[in-house]
Image (tube, rainbow, N blue to C red; front, side, top):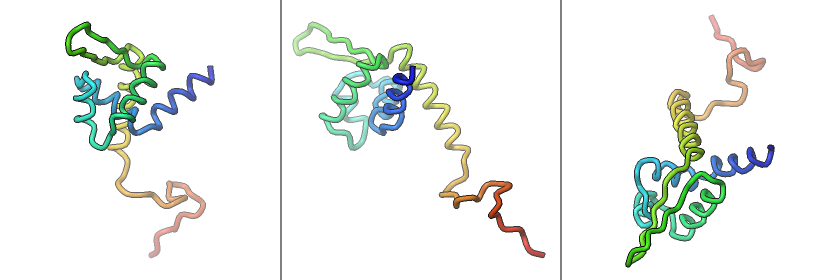
Length: 117
């Protein structure tokens, strides 16, 4: 069981994996379009992320027997569930105050300064 948590944490902690999931969820399905939609990603990194996401069962690859060959990706049910969680994280992040918070700045912190008269 702990193995699964480690694998998903690795996906969520990888900026490129998250961006690939988001792009596919937004309707970008083909590798070339994914590469254009995700600023800064290289072909090599995109292919590595797609293979990893497939191996984890988050993305499904469909190859069409056409000339030239066509490949498309879509989220699996598990990939959709993860994308929903990522959306929830985005909403939470939007609610957080801007800028870094100093250590111990939370309410009730022992080191918090008390206002003067």
